[in-house]
Image 1: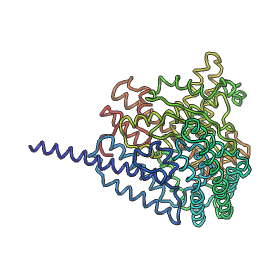
Image 2 (image 1 turned 30 degrees about the horizontal axis):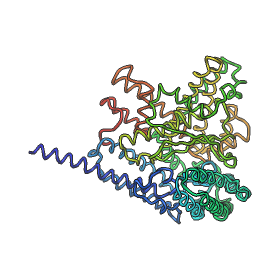
Image 3 (image 1 turned 30 degrees about the vertical axis):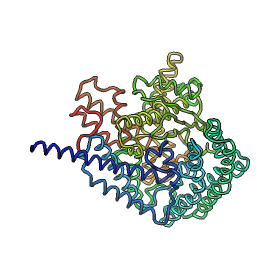
Image 4 (image 1 turned 90 degrees about the vertical axis):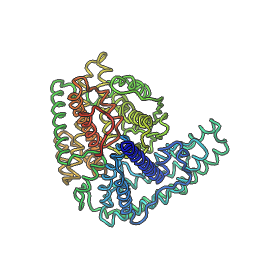
Amino acid sequence: MFLFILFTLFLYSRFHEDARFEKFAEKFFLTELCSNPVNFHYTLSDPAAYEIDESTLTLPVYHAGQASEELEKIRAVLAALRKFHPENMSAANQYTYILLSTYLTAAENCSSYLYYEEPLSPSSGVQSSLPVLLAEYRLSSAEDIENYLSILSQIPAYLEGIALYEREKAQYGLFMSDASADKVIEQCDTLMNRQALEAESHFLETTFTQRLTKLVEQGLIEASEAEQWQAENKRLLTTVVAPAYDRLADELTLLKGSGTNTQGLACYENGREYYQACLRLSTGSYRTVPEIKKMLSNDFEKNYVSLITLLREYPALSDSLPSVNSTFPAVSPEKILAGLQQIIAEDFPAIPQQTGCTVKYVDEALEPYSAPAFYMVPPIDDMTENTIYINRLDTAEGLSLFTTLAHEGYPGHLYQTVYSGSYLRSIDASPLRSILSYGGYIEGWATYTELLSYDYAIRLTKDVHPETEALYLAEKLNRQVQLCLYSILDIIIHYEGAPYERVCEILSAIGISEDETMRAVYEYIIEEPCNYLKYYLGYLEIEALKEQAETVWTESSGESAFTLYRFHRFLLENGPADFRTLSRLLETTRLSGRSYLLEKKN
């Protein structure tokens, strides 16, 4: 009877704690999603499954002093989280608990430095990302159309709140430089071009019309209704959205001159400390900044020496590199994606569902402000349709398109998103895991697969054109050297406080001496701290995990225990996550042989 009572109490504590935590996790998940109707719409295709009326959601509007309130909200969630007892949870809930706790702690550290965040970055700010999200906003019903138009009507208040935040930044001496402000002002003028709106050729008009036309063809709405909604869309864009962008540009014009620092974060008070916190949150790496710099420096030296050695062995490569794209077959993006799915099958597990992908091209108006390519993440409850955008301005055909589609498609972002999402649903994991942001894991994986695609390109062409093997290897090394160098510069600028002149010396030492190029590199790193590190440090952390896996699995099971297939499956089924958690997870397999979940409180 005593043993029976003990066992009953054990089962009660286990199931009770699991139920409490799952309820907490779902509430946090929905609270985060409902705070922004655009993010909500992109994350869930069936809000009714969570009993949420999407039409009631509104864009978040910043109010005075809200920056400190956001920090208190994070601390309140952390305090509530620490009341749980993960040792009494299932292994799956333990892992979710550890990921959430680690993520929120990193977010708290970063948010404690008020007004350092920049929502209007010239490269990735709200002013340019919002129009792209609106152009791809899913319209599947009349309700979706009404919700979309409602969001357009809320944009003035949304941008006014951001302008208020920028004024508060300026009061603390943290406003952007005049050069950055000029870029954002120009974007506001260009993205909501009045002539294009009047001519009904603006991409937010043409894409809206295209989506409505599909609904008419499917019989979901009437043609007369579509005409009325098109007219309302035009009215909102010309009389509501465009003036809101004008007012934002005017606010930034008035604030010009208040941004006294034209250098990196190190030149602000507490800037170095904020940079360390931002680096940890954005990359998921728990190494110190000096350790990271040494890691990058060693990698740079290795690849730079390899590249120089290769160029000396094949002197003709120097002249061939500028035209490397022409050496790879010029085929359509769709054929490249299909070919990549076939060639990766040996080293990557298959996606357990049918997945479609549409390749689109960035609208000409957005080309100067968009990445060379980007992947639109589908809803977590319906990943059957995916979209990849190609920027013709920055992505040439041939090898460049091949490696870009490996990064964005297979086995990069699309593949990782769909595989991980499908796997998490198959084990009934908390949807909370899908909204925790692990930039280093996500972009590190895509960079890892992009670099791997150079080897695939060699495999595809060496029989017919054996000379491309050395050429593609040189291009791969050149890519690594470039990304690694820019990551080192990120640290030198933001952590060590290097001025522009020092950056020019470093770039000139490896042959980059054009004033325009050096200025562009410097300004981009100033405006996007930690961004290059998300990609390249994330890649190096994955390579470090691979070495760790080889050691751990070989020691526990023998020489044949490690395969790329097993390693990729480990990463895909346990991520997205920070790299410290993944490393600790690997160590548990040394003793237990398990390769998925942590079994004890961390």
